[in-house]
Length: 249
Image (cartoon, rainbow, N blue to C red; front, side, top):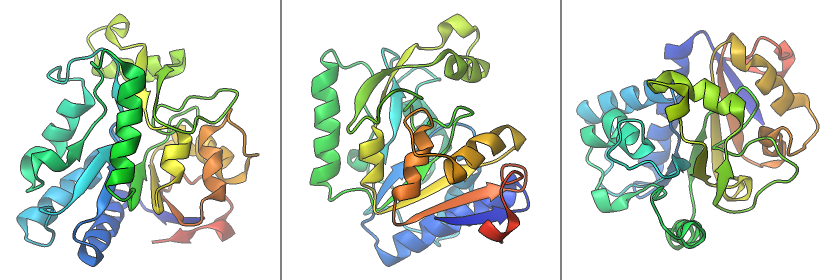
C-alpha cells in the first residue's frame, strides 16, 4: 500500500487526475472504475481541463461506476448517472455506449447485478478503480456488516450514510434507503486501486483502513491485501497516520 499525502484538496485532485492521465496514456482503451460523491469532483474537473487542453483522449475508454441509488430515476438530479454526466461525461469525448452505471430502476435487481459483473468481465476487467471512503470506512456502498460481499448487489444503506447524503437532498426522508453497488470482491478485482480522501472527518476511517484488522465491519480494510493500491490524501485525512508510512507529494 502506497500512501501519498498532498497539501490540500486541490493538490490531491491534481495528483489523482495525473494518475488517470498516465493510465490512459499507457493504455488508450483502459477500463476505468469511477466513483461519485464530493471527493472525486476536483479530479473530474482536472480531467475535463486536461481534455480541453488536448492532453487526454477518452475516445477508446470504457467506464464502470461503483454504484447507483435504487429506485431513483437516472433523470433525477441526485442520481449518480446525472452526477457523472454533469461532472465529467458531458464534457469529454467518451462514447455513450462505453459508459456503464448500474440500473437503479431495474425490476429484477439480481439479474441486473449479474449483468453488471458480466459486463465488467467481458470488458476485460477494471484497470484502475477510483474509490472514496465513508466516515464508517465504506467503499462504494459496501457498508460495515458481518461479511464481505463478492459481487454487485443491492444494499440497505446505514443511517449514518443516509444522514451524510442528506445534504444533497431537500429532506433526509428523500434520500434513497437502498443502492446497487459493486461488492468488495468486485472492487478487489481491479488491477490498480486509487483511494481518495480529504478532511479531518475521514482521518479515523483512513487510520482504520491502514492499521486496523481486516474485518467486514471496516469494509475498506480489505484493501490492505490488494497488491497495487495507492491512497491519495490531503494533510487532514492523513493526520492520524505515522509520518514514516507515507510520502509527501
